[in-house]
Image (cartoon, rainbow, N blue to C red; front, side, top):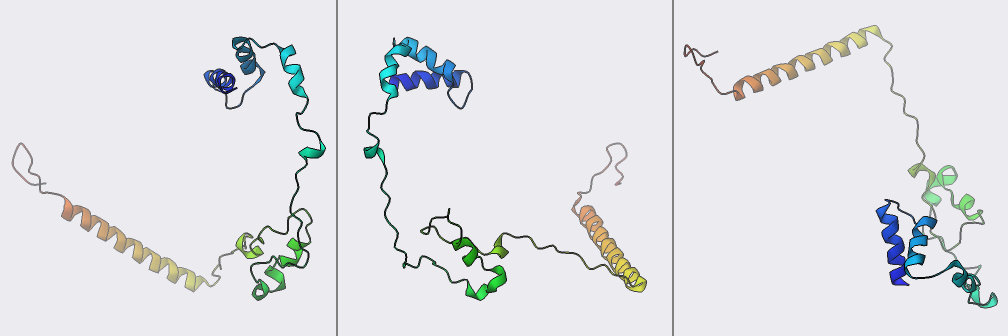
Length: 156
């Protein structure tokens, strides 16, 4: 069986596929001299249906599975009641985090309406920009090594 699957994966990888398709199985069947008729007995499940059932442990109803106390979040943020009312979520799963961890809150910047304050802020930001440019120019001129011109020996 391992050699058969190796042939299938070789065909699959040579065609740069991540999943095997029917054309990948056909060369493997040919190499191992198997016909489709030889595979017919294997279509029936070898295990009888009653024996194939999976037996899951029975949950106890009075067992409290909530690991975290979300009472401090209040009724707006806590989803404990809503989550427990979903029948498709098994009770042994941990509770989901509260709403505030995954819900986005819109954040709107405060726009200044007073024209005098707008001018003052623009002036202050302009001063900060000028200071930053002066520091940048000062740092770039002080770091530059002194280079003499090759023809007349004068510094630039």
